[in-house]
Image (cartoon, rainbow, N blue to C red; front, top):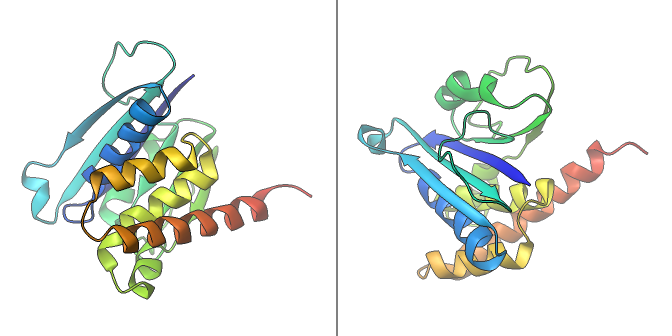
Length: 184
């Protein structure tokens, strides 16, 4: 098993933190091999920010995601630049409120999660990245729920309760999307 996940959005949206939590969950709590790479130099000022996590049962010999199986997008600019990079048959999870203009992506399953709106309903817009992690966990099953919760606890000591609630809301939303997409 080898899964490449690419998170892309704007600096300040917690893109790097989402990657860190995912890699922590996979490596420490799921006993998988995982690597995290990130790009946030000048991007940390509101430009594109990217983190990539590779999860594998085997050793990981190449540290960059070349064709992600899963693409999580949280900004129009990020979508425009990276949407076509998803692997054939891959999964795209995007925030439709932040990506109003979509193009046809061939051979990918697209899930629309209004993560920012859900986070705002909790009173903390900054938790949109955690809402996305909940949806990612439900939709893909790549990371165990308990492992992701433990990784959130480890990486977000302040504001833990609202972040756990954000994860729960994202997970529930992702479960509903997944159920709706399955054939009867």
